[in-house]
Amino acid sequence: MKARLLLPALACSFTTGLTAQDTAGIDAADLKGRPYSPYADRAFPENVYFGDTHVHTGLSADAGGGGTRLMPRDAYRFARGEQVTSNTGQPAKLNRALDFFMITDHSDAMGAITDIIKGAPNIIATDQGKQFHKAFNAGGDTAAKAAVELIRLFSQGKVDPALNYQPGNQAYRRVWDDIMSAAEEFNDPGNFTTLIAYEWTSLTKGNNLHRNVIFRDGPERTGKIVPYTTTPPIGSPNPRDLWKWLQNYEDTTGGDVLAIAHNGNLSNGMMFAMKDDFDNDAALDADYARTRMKWERLYEATQIKGDGEAHPFLSPEDEFADFESWDWGNLDASEAKTKEMLPGEYARSGLLRGLELQAKTGVNPYKFGMVGASDTHTALTAPNNDNFFGKLTAYEPNEHRATHIAKTNKDTGISYKSWRYITGGLTAVWSESNTRGALFDAMERREAYATTGPRMRVRFFGGWEFEKDDQNRRDLAQLGYSKGVPMGSDLAAAPEGAKAPSFLLYALRDPMGANLDRVQIIKGWLDADGKSQEKIYDVSVSDGRTIAEDGRCKTPVGDTVDLSIPAWTNTIGASELGGVWTDPEFDPALQAFYYARVIEIPTPRWTAYDAVKFGIKMPEEIPLKGQERAYTSPIWYTP
Image (tube, rainbow, N blue to C red; front, side, top):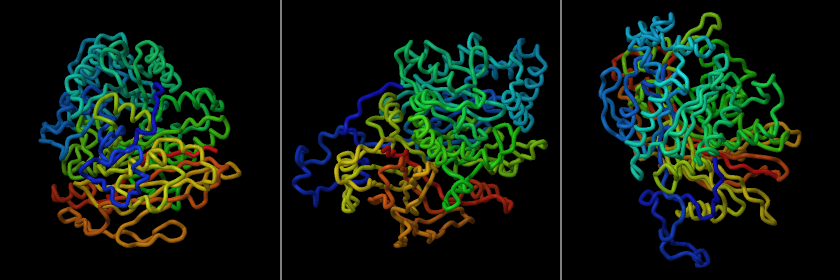
């Protein structure tokens, strides 16, 4: 992660053609130093690009073992809009191509799964190798259960070393070279961008601490290394050691790299810890905070294994907090969840804990932007509910997939079915161009946001000079940067006489999706006693509903979902919402952050589409509709 000079001119602007700008009503003073044409001499990002930052192919052991036979080139073809044949022989195609894509196969055991399936002599020589070779080749439910068992063994450090290929193994290097080659073959700057990446697969007694490592560079630099693993003595499960490796990569290659932390809902509280779980619970210090903030600029707030923005236990006043929550245990179901673990797992509570640690150490380790991803293990990124191809090959479309037991552990009492999986999220990036360098730089400066699948366009700026009339302008990007800073930034120092920060928020619905219910700003801060506080404000709501003096609209938007089709109508909600909001309870002495949340009207869930397509009745416990959403990266205020 290299520091780059960001000029005020690097603004966000709505895509030309979607929101045409109009100079009517602009004072002559506003045109000083600018040409008459509002589209001329722009030096800032004008487009938002949508992509997936977390994808597994048949090269990952748990994917390939479970029946995934699609490889990186298949995944790229699908992501750029081509029709492919799925792992279960079904035709599959996206409704729209993605703009960018990265394959993040697991760091550990890279290359081993192909040897396990074909029965390489070094694999068959071990008892585990024989068992997995037989199970994986049996296919179907047997292979799926074997994949879960492989995850369990790896999570507990019990997988046979012969199956856990590490750097130095010829197969390991061969697979990494092929991953890089595939990325180069499909990288088409300006149209479809591929970034070289992998997933550092840290598991501590089943607690998920994965990070997706993303490179700005091509093979001329990434070819000088192989992925850092989590298996000693070559690798380590400690994030501090990963950060050292990232620093060494940049120092020795001249390249640029960052890490995106995995959704923390399976970490059992370790993702946003208040102590060092790898150093006898020692206090986290400024060096830890500074280093984590340097490398982990983004956080995966939503993906197939549940949404991770907020939790109803932590945010009881937030009626939208209980969205696709996964809150029963860790990755391998070896330890049940407790309420005390929850604050270390969710984005909002993680941001609050960052403020707490900043108050103690002087540095905020959890100063992250938010992104979304799939974490698919089928090689098929499918963010739309009517086109969901599951987490694993066993959950590609079939009439039994919703009620299949995904994971169970009698000792811990954990058991859940596969209807819990949700469609994968997407990462939206405001970038100067659809190229590796521009996309990476935008992610590094946190000018990105997460969606749970839809491609709504969202702008969020903070400053000290926004006025109510600004919300009626169409040149919002020019206005946003001239008066403030975009998502992912720190508020500038308050000018003399300024009483409170104001925020400019705008959201435009997915042109192929649902209307918007409301747009909100979530504020988090430390009060005068150093305790974490949060509050939600509705900035704009649809259909003429009113926002009360407490900043909330308690009237639901309504529901047009017809489960018999299934479908919905955009006769409620709004195609665009936005406004200028000023913090009514601002205290200049207190640290704070602000981020925006965009809520759609209700739409059918993938389980509703399965019910109709397969002609089945879903059990009452299975939800059939929901409200998709987006979360922006925050804007921070520091006294």
